[in-house]
Structure formats: structure tokens, C-alpha cells
Image 1 (spheres, one colour):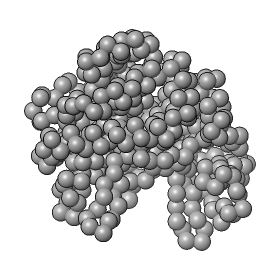
Image 2 (image 1 turned 120 degrees about the horizontal axis):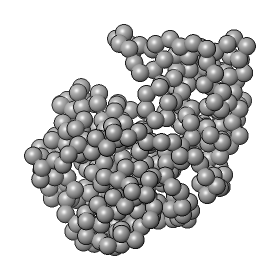
Image 3 (image 1 turned 180 degrees about the horizontal axis):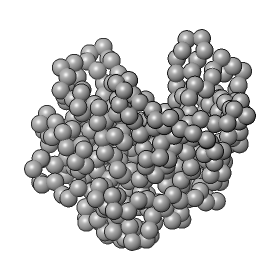
Length: 361
């Protein structure tokens, strides 16, 4: 099967807007303690007076700039950001956070979320951690929560009004992994290929798009034999927005081509199908474990206009053709399409849908 046209073209032509959190989603967030009173908001962090370009260890310029605030505001911001970190990590118990300090606040004007990245340091041992403060976007929040419920990864995040706080997702950025780690002898090729199949399936089922190499990380965990590999999404801006089906399959992005070809080289199609089916079964198992919570989330998502109607129509037609199911044509929202993806899995889990990892061109 040949690779189709690059699915990134649609995003380059039209930048995704930010969607406000509406009452249905807000109620869900309150019920599950995601919505909390925060001492510092995204808009307050925007009131910096100067910036300094941030370079990496090799002296190369990054997309981030360190921001500088008026001295009169620094103490308030530092204490407020420490309290937010306490809410994120220990449910607000500030007594165990007294030895931490805010080392740096960085800002990135690139991308949809224009985030602030807060670096927090342990004064006793210089250990550092990060978290992010962003403008709240409903589709991104749905993406975070779907990741928490349907993937093997747990995510901590908080919302307050128009502010979103996310924990840092640690790992090797996908583009760095492809260029520096993909051919290393200490990593077993079949484990890398297996995880790509599983990651591809997770994104497609829950309709998480734009998983180019710099939007996911690779986590390497030493095991008693070899190392385990997991690919984790770290950017959720493109949850259920674009209308093109292939936008939700990471294998089709040009940035990921070396990884896709590596997978095709080391994996038989029958084995790829096995791993695909394993992940489908795990997704349904996770959905069953969180059935009430997932239902409430998808109910809110079904009535939330997080994508233009024409995108919904294009995507439902693409999914209907892909799965040979007219059920998709009845879906009127992105939330309904995610639900139908899960129901389609449930109906066909005992059948053979054919492998989703194609042979390279």
C-alpha cells in the first residue's frame, strides 16, 4: 500500500482555534476534581515585562524564551506557582513543598497553546521538575482525559476558568529518538515496532491527531531482559478536530517515516495484527473499568462543538468507508465518532479487520 498524501497539509493551511470549556465539560471536571481554584492564572503570567531567548546545552536557540516579571510581582507569582505544583502533585499539601523554589518561567509563542513552562527545583538536592500553564482549550482537555482513561498512562492536570495546568510528560522526544536511538544495539527492534503499532492504534481509536515525532516521547524502561519501550503522546491540541482520517494515524506523517519503515522491516504483518488486536482489547478493558466516567465524558463531548461541522462530516465519511460501517454516518459530533469507534471495536473484536500497519511504498 502506498502512503497517502501527507496529512499535515490540512493543519498548515488552517490553524486550529481554541474552544472554551462549556458547562457540560466543566461539570465533569468539577465532579472528578480536575477543576480547582488556582492562585495564578494564565492571563496573570502573560503580564511579563521582558524575555530572554533560551538556549539548549549545546548553545542552540530553542523555541522557548525565559520571561521576566516586575520585582513587585515575583514573590506572589512564585508562591502561587508552588501552590499549584502542590495541588498537582500532593492534592494541595503545601507542607511537603517548603523546600521547593521556582527556578525559571519560560514562554513559547509557537503552536496553539502558547504555554508557560515552569521549572521547579528541590533546594536540598537540585532535582528539578516541570509543569505547564496554558490557556484552557476544550478539545485539549478532552484529549488529556481520554488519554488518562483509555491509554496505559495516567495524567495529572487541573483547570480553573480559562487556565489549564498540565504535568510534564517525561521521555525522549520522538524526533530525537528517531535520529539518535532507533538503531542502537541495546534496544530490541521488535519492541520498538510493537509499541509503534500499539501507539498507532490508541491514537486512531480515540481520534488523537497530529502525532508527528515532536509531539510524542519515547520512554525506555530497563527490564531484567532488554528494555521495554512505550510511546506517549505529549501534545493534545489536535484531539478530534481535523476531518481527514489519516491525520489520526501516526504512521502516515512524514516525520515518522523512519519509524514506520523500521516497523515494517522488523515486523511480520501477522504479528502486527496480533499487537493491534492486543491493544484493542486493552482499550476496551480500560473503557469498561472507567465506564461511568467515560460515558459522562463522551456525553459532554457529543454536545460540544470542538470542530467545524464540515470536519465532522468528512471524518465520519472516512471512518465509515474505512470500517465498512454506515453507523458512522449517523454521528453528528466528534464525541459521537469517538464513541462509535469504541462501539465498532466492541462489535468486531472477534473478527479480522485487517492490519492497520501497511507495507512501505
